[in-house]
Amino acid sequence: MSLAAHPRPARRRGLVTESHRKGAAVVASTLTVLPSHAPARLVVFVSGSGTNLQALLDACRDPAYGARVVAVGADRDGIAALGRAAAAGVPTFVHRVKDYPDRPSWDRAIRDATAAYEPDLLICAGFMKLFGVDFMAAFPERIINTHPALSPAFPGMHSARDALEYGVKVTGCTLFAVAGGIDDGPVIAQRAVPVEDDDDADTLHERIKVAERAMLVEYVGRMARGGWSITDRKVTVR
Ligand SMILES: Nc1nc2c(c(=O)[nH]1)N[C@@H](CN(C=O)c1ccc(C(=O)N[C@@H](CCC(=O)O)C(=O)O)cc1)CN2
Ligand SMILES: NCC(=O)N[C@@H]1O[C@H](COP(=O)([O-])[O-])[C@@H](O)[C@H]1O
Image (cartoon, rainbow, N blue to C red; front, top):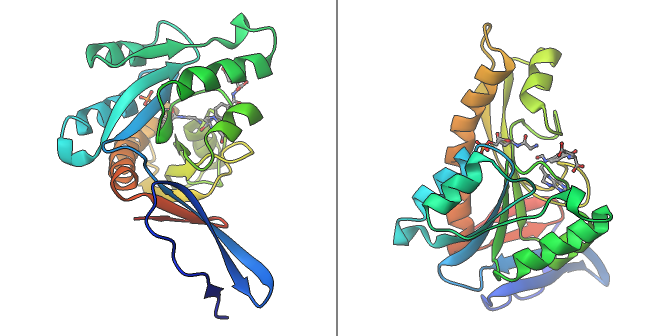
């Protein structure tokens, strides 16, 4: 089936939508995002040790990487990731759900704190809270999450344990564009990691994280430098 696409729009910065038509019917829609800043502005969200954040901070030291971490957001205090941000001179903000009367109030507070940094790309790197509709609506097509499993297998917060308990022989990591549900957004990249006979959840997760950091650094750099498109569930990184 051939799709008669509209002429490709000029490479404008920001968000561009193209409709692909067959006759009068729209059969697919492509959203293209080009970062508005060079280097692209990253806000990274964390809840724990922050080794993925550290990999991004290290990559951003090279001007050719094309991105810089302008802020780090968290849902809790006292985590190593916030220390990593401070050591790199990156501003941080913390919003704890329990400090707000309800979840939507928390969602709006973390949305507003994030928007103040004018991010091109928002990266969940071990962030253990689900964003709500207000947050999601403020940053369309520009929130990504690194997840320690081969999506759609093993969503949630205990993916390495769940993979071991299921008995899979190969698991891995997935970088995806955060959408409406839990860990169900369009896949940007994946890496496979074999499960060893003597793995426990910690050894398996640590091996996944080695692959995850390399995947995250590679794809965030490419997205920052060249932008990305999403057609239905298919993501193309430039
Ligand atoms: N709306 C979305 N928000 C987020 C997604 C997503 O796909 N959609 N991915 C996450 C990260 N994530 C796994 O990758 C994940 C994070 C948190 C949870 C969860 O159930 N959290 C609970 C409580 C957790 C706690 O603090 O102990 C909650 O939010 O109430 C599932 C998956 C980033 N956000
Ligand atoms: N579902 C969310 C989830 O499980 N996230 C995972 O937490 C770890 C954070 O490590 P880090 O703090 O060392 O970067 C990473 O493996 C990340 O994929």
